[in-house]
Length: 570
Ligand code: AMP
Image 1 (cartoon, rainbow, N blue to C red):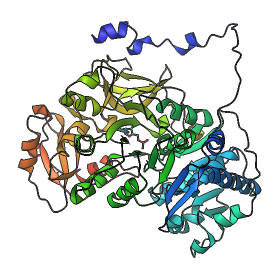
Image 2 (cartoon, protein in one colour):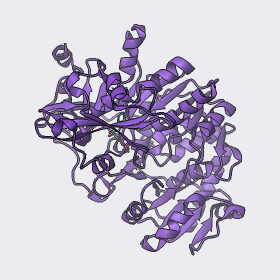
Image 3 (cartoon, helix red, strand yellow):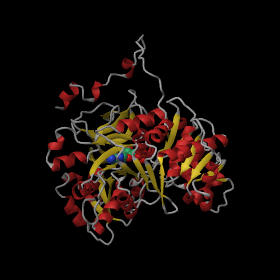
Image 4 (cartoon, rainbow, N blue to C red):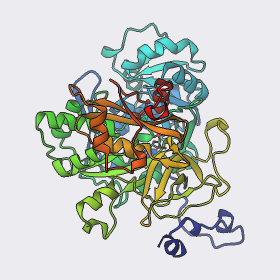
């Protein structure tokens, strides 16, 4: 079957090399306008056609703030005007260290509207990483929330390029700080009239910069263009995708510093959807309150956020009265989250896969014709996969020699990706050339692709457990283990084994107030995974280490358990 599909043009072999596509010879030029794709146009459109539509923010100071796209448009232009007055030049990287709020949104469009690059820094990174990133990007100005001023105070004398810090606050909430060059954002824009024409840039000009969290080596900068960001949100916005409507109310839980909040910072205003921004409060009760009071219909975030929400719903016997759809990505969606949302609360889950380097959405999991008639258990199996590539993304899986593997749902290999919003290099050439000979980017993920084109991520390449020459998927075991009613989080790492090279160790964080035994966990896994995938040992810890983007930090776990000897290895 897989061979036949390949022959019919569905397999990876359908793609002719690029040289054969980009005809150099004479051709008939199309007669359509050469209007460059430009991010500030999104806000112009929102102000003109959805001017009264609301943006709601839970401010860091506490109260809920309400504004409209028309007002945001004016204030973003005032911000651009002020930046120009400060001497900001096209192409300069202006940093933001901020939660999702209306002021961060204005600064985002203001920065890009001067022709500069909006460089979001993840405030959860270690101080040394923030110093490295800011110096590497040569940030002359850093927008910051009041909450991050203490971090900046500690590192300011190591920030080589920073001329001033623009605090996203009004005069009354300006922090007392020993930082010398603080600018109050509200004062800064109050001095402008907003009569400002966006600085027009070619569509291939850089517009955004986001560094990968980099578990090994220094973080690397992914430099988005106007074109790549717009194409990503359009491509992911189709019917079998995020599919937003002007009638939607979106809660953007996914941070703007996490790869463009998965495009919501563009798709919400361009569709005229109401946008709700949660500020710094991402705990279950706070997210629930916004979902209900603002009548949210659509939201997106990583699984850890949804675990907190679901725990709150279950503990308090609550319902979700308006939410219809939730996009979940960043790590694999555990079955428990999928089933709770869909079966208990009537909310459709769309599983997404992507990475900073893919702008970030590469695949979305929406059932195809025919699959919607399958029995529920079959549908759940498909929905736990990461989904299909969104056009025009191209995907293939390859073996260690770079040979394409079949789309049979069984063969797993390195996932390679290509397309107009996929990185071709890192900022300042760090890390060398990341593309293969055919122009595909190596994601570092290991995946299968089934006959319908659905990918399933089995691991990061470096986390795969190699047992006796075969691969064991840590993600699959984790997702099953986390379904145990007494388990809060689960992680699997490979440990040395004299006979099999590596064998799995299962690390469990029990739910608060629960105690669970090794035997209970192993009995729960029995029959749900292949016998030879069964962990050789189960250990319990109080807290799971996470990366700055909310993923389980396997490097920390490997360090923690480097001296652990598996009972089977003794
Ligand atoms: P980041 O660049 O920080 O967003 O991390 C990207 C990585 O997160 C990917 O290469 C995957 O390893 C992982 N990832 C993202 N989405 C998923 C998903 N739905 N399932 C499994 N892993 C995911």
